[in-house]
Length: 66
Image 1 (cartoon, helix red, strand yellow):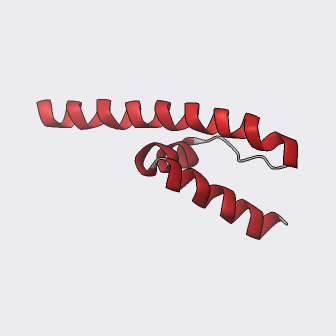
Image 2: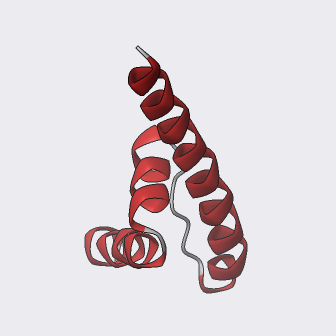
């Protein structure tokens, strides 16, 4: 039971960190007209993969929407 609670807390922490990093990146890339939406999925990707995950999200956004 403790392990499940630990994993849940770790996942929530990663989501919050990912959302913070996405917010910072969105402020920086706003100058070029890009915006990465912030939701649970993108926050999880950014939280678990870090900077490579955010770059991947930006590349996907660039290829799909431009």
